[in-house]
Image (cartoon, rainbow, N blue to C red; front, side, top):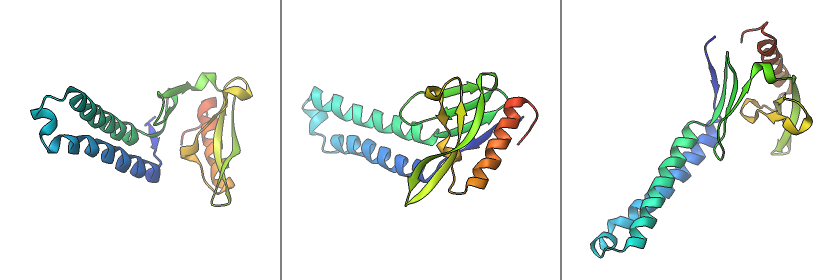
Length: 150
């Protein structure tokens, strides 16, 4: 099975722009030359941290999304480590409302692992159309059961 990657394009664009601006803030800290010429170690460390954290933010934003493959579902988020959910640990996949945007309900597949505490919403696969999400839920459930291929 080929991996299926779903990425939230608008969120990625916004995060890349913000992270790049953060990195450029660190670069502009060095442009005057005073920080390096005067051996201002605090300024050198601060500028370097801004550049490094901005570049790490760009990297994390570009990897954002959900990967569905033969091993399971991998949820790549911006602010935490990737979460891999193997098919054999899933109890069920449901369509649930995970939020409201612009006054409209947002539906997404939710992976249930053991209890309601372990529910993992896949917001990157979300939609305003409940029927579209229910179709995605059926595909994911088929993969979990080993009977379907998207």
